Every structure is written in structure tokens, then in C-alpha cells.
Length: 88
Image (cartoon, rainbow, N blue to C red; front, side, top):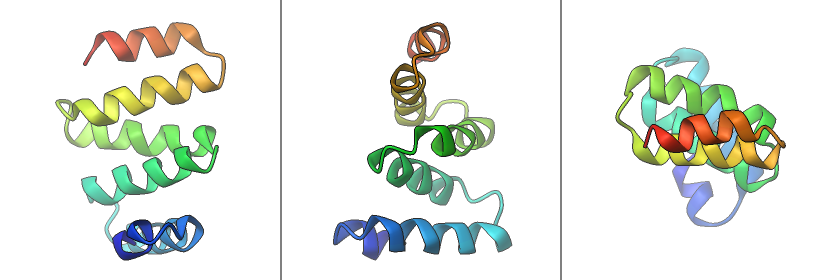
């Protein structure tokens, strides 16, 4: 997945991470990378559960917290955005 990310092939990266996560559902970095790629392709609604999973696995992952807040803001959920931005 990461090789596709580095070459700006978002859809291939997304597909690869989704397949990988089926057999490794608690792989923190893959959830983050998938969520980030989804966010980049304006799929924030699909990214949110993956950012939340990252934070479930590692509550101190501040970059996940920041991007989760951005996704909520992009979806017009300012209350959730503020909540997550204040937890950074």
C-alpha cells in the first residue's frame, strides 16, 4: 500500500490496505494509511472509522487525532471536530 501512496496511486493504495486489514485487523499504521488516503480522495466518511481504530489502538497518535478532526469538519460536524482537535 505504501508504495502506491508514494507514487500517488490512491485507489490502488486503498485497495491494498483494505485487503491487508482483513487479515491484520489491528495493524495501526495500515488503518492510519488507509484513512489518510481516503481523506485525500474526499472520502472522509469512510476514513473516520479507520482513524477511530488507530486511536483505539494508540490513543496518543496525535496525527490521527488531527486528521479525524479535519474529517469531521469537512463533513460539517463542528462539535466532533472541536472535540477531537482539543484532544491532541
